[in-house]
Amino acid sequence: MQSATPPPGTGKTDWARLEAMTDEEIDRAMASDPDAAPVLDDNWFANAERVPSGKTRISIRLDPDILSFFKQGGPHYQTRINAVLRAYMEARQAKATGG
Image (cartoon, rainbow, N blue to C red):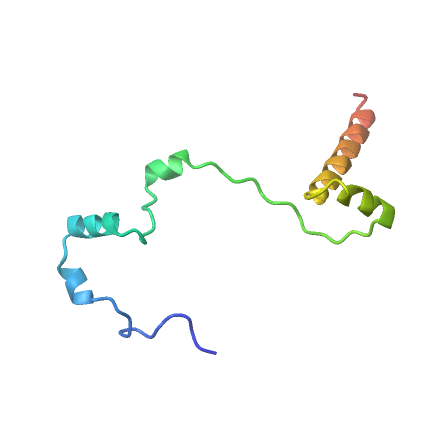
């Protein structure tokens, strides 16, 4: 199996030209390159929002009529099943705590 990374010295980078450039020249070259990834500075991290963790992937066995009922509602039937289970869970929790 071949590595996705080319062996050192076989890439297209002109290292001598790059080493001769000033930081300002490198910054300008990066800013004008549409393929360059944006620089993630302290300001970016300060304003970034944390993405909530995803849902846990499981396998669940449902009665055919239940699955059919939720699928008839169209796309995102799994989200609707999750919402029904959440409502049930929250109702049970409220009952258990006297709420």
